[in-house]
Image 1 (tube, one colour):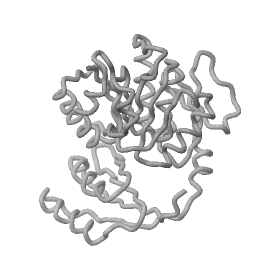
Image 2 (cartoon, rainbow, N blue to C red; image 1 turned 45 degrees about the vertical axis):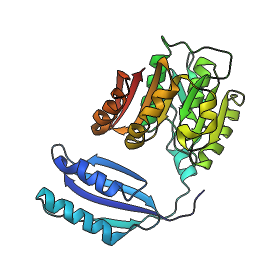
Image 3 (cartoon, rainbow, N blue to C red; image 1 turned 180 degrees about the vertical axis):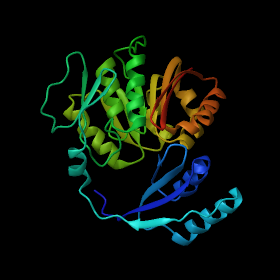
Image 4 (tube, rainbow, N blue to C red; image 1 turned 180 degrees about the horizontal axis):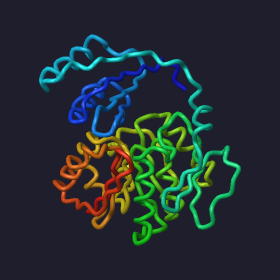
Length: 296
């Protein structure tokens, strides 16, 4: 696991200006979140990143934005967070999760798996995706709903595609529910490693092809297209940018599950895919995150 120091950026702003400041600090961070401090009042915009931020540049950007919006410049808090064994810490706060018929649990779970559910063993690790996050939970709910009417052809090598696989949780869900091979791709080698481990732990080693690469340009992705089902739990901007490539890799009549976007970003992502002839068939909001299901 990375030993790079973790830093926190935080500021309190009026509700109307949350999106602008979240984007301003988010450009400097690895993750950003927003929280309502009081109903109808101020919100906390909080971001985390590995390595010290450029404080002067960040302060300047916040000041310019506040002036442009005509509000008092918010106080910017920047601090170095103490090192934590996040895996052990996550074990303690990671109870089993239900998302549709999927039952996500860690190896520390000693209880029973509910009858009729589809168990997914995923430990908190160095790759994103345990089912607890709103975007992952929304994807699992979307897959559960799709499974009621979508049939994926068994046999052959095509199956489904999990773009930006993280821990491999969505690839596992697809492989277990439809019993088809899944191509899982991520630009992060650690995510690929974790996905392969989780495939073994879940008895899906032969069903999940996990490889590192640059999105749809990865050779294995093109080798098995077109796909009847694609999952992509990434971020709003890359989702929108990759919409043309998604259309080219999605079979006519196929579905794509898109996530990693905040509620306020869904219109932009929807439009990017509509421009490619894809139709919105479902949206699943979970907290401040939205999962979209589109069809070609």
